[in-house]
Image 1 (tube, rainbow, N blue to C red):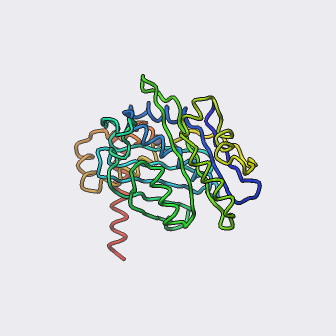
Image 2: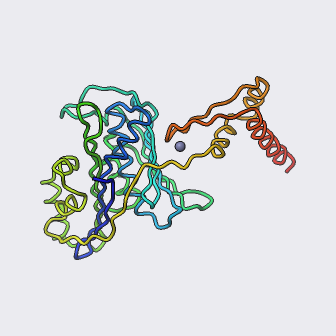
Image 3: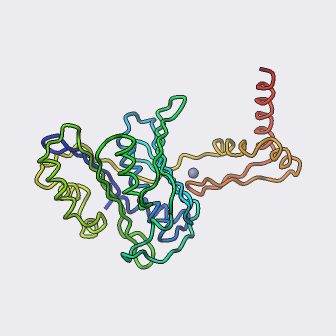
Length: 301
Ligand code: ZN
């Protein structure tokens, strides 16, 4: 099955829903950073959620970033998506290994620990919209559910899952997001609640060869589903040698001066896709000159 996302509405238009299958792109992310099982479980869940939240964006240029900062060994999880079905992401410490949790599952909550979840919406304006909540469990789906309740005042049900084979390759990955419209009736709410109670897991459904459409039909059973959109999704990074120069600028004038004096090449690897860019003396000198010019102008103001 290709990776894709569907968007749907119940017949009474009281619920909107999204589902994504993302096995191939999560496998690609796993290979790029050689993620441990727990690291790819955390990243795969976050990538799936980012794809869904990316689909909620209005303009093609908008970006959404989910940033999780915990005090656990995984440290940070970050995923950025757009509305075109492109996503990228990484965890700070891809090598984390922990024993399973009490339920015998990968202990993602333990690997993330206590901390904060930040959602950044970039509409291409001067300042992005930033909204932050504390982590509830560190299992990501619960944390995002809490985010929607707190920051957007929208009752939301979210399920995310990554299932690994014994050889650590991804068997299934994806998720769903269901939101109640403000005018949803009590009957709709109770039908949905019953469906959610009976539901087991996203990866269980996909493992049976079922599709995102099937997943939403199960979750919205008895409510009638109309599918509005089906979209291919993929792991994509648009980094370039030129954009990497900006990363060099963050080293600051002093460090850049030293690098120029040493005459060494500087290698910068993209934290999202792992691509490596090598910068020669001239490249670094040009970044340094631009920084110095900038500082001089600021100083004169
Ligand atoms: Zn990249």
